Amino acid sequence: MALATSPLSLVCKAWRAHLDSALNGPDRSKVNVVLGTPAGAASAAGDGSPHHQVNLFFYRFEPAGLFPDTLPGDTAWVRGFCLVTPFAVGEDSVGEGENDLRLLGEVLRLAHEQPVLQVPVDDTVVQLQVMLQPLGLDALNQLWSTQGDAVYRPSALFEVSLLPVIPAQPTLAGPWAGALGLGVQAPLTAEATTPSARGPAVPAMVPDLRQSDWAPALAWVQDGQCALSLGFVVGSPALAAFTPRLWLAGQPGMPVTLHWQHWSRTQGWVDHPTVTEARIASPGIWPDQAAGAPLLALPLPDTSQPGQWALHAERAWVRPADGAPLTLRSNPLLISLSAA
Image (tube, rainbow, N blue to C red; front, side):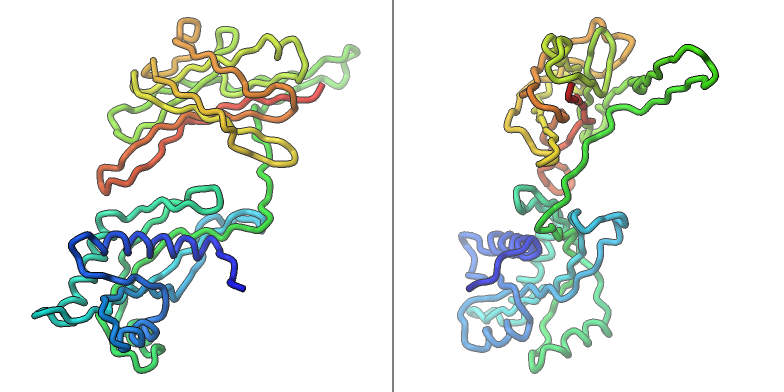
């Protein structure tokens, strides 16, 4: 019985598949991109294979050095180090040595032009970065001395990060705090008073459109006032009469998608399939102008159960440096539904 795949193996295989697709163009010689040790690749090349090989040797993994508060039920992140070694064959008047350099040069070019990859892993997308790293002579000698009789080939070391370690039973993320407040009461008064909490004031939010990677901004508008979080009781008249009205800011006319997430005690945060297409109508959010703001009515997907609903806006963006497609996300908005 074959071993089950792991997120670590899926990410490493994704980079292998990316290189395999890029190196095997329609007008190029066949190149086998494999995962394994240099000794194993050298043995396969020595068996008279007519095809070139590029071997990916993931030989070291280290903690990410970030996220010191990661708990056992949270996803952990590690850095992987991969030695890339070509095992080329001679073709016509081009010898093995020159073909080794041609293959290694192509790998270096691909890592330079497209250092960021998006890899689907277990219902999520991991953003992977590939970076060329120096490899000293001592470390290089020690590494190849473990490969038996394999003859040294020109190689390059890459850091592949960050690789996910996903728990089999992940911890459910807790609800968000809608607002924090403080109630003060004099203990010696004869009349009892009811402490009240007021949410923080919403500041003006104006995306910097001078930057190409600007993110949209969102705010609720309720009773002529801006809010980042709202709360209702399930089954109450206030909830029955409530329709979320959204103030969406950014570059006017730019299309965005609005995504809901729902939190429950049993499932934690779950993406809701309801996705709304919208266009931005305002360059910014100014709370003192909420009464005349261009608003979008956006009904809650479900109001029958206690829990929380979070909303954010996304827009697609292609990073000019390397052409990597990225998703830019707005600030989140929250609606809390409590039991009666």
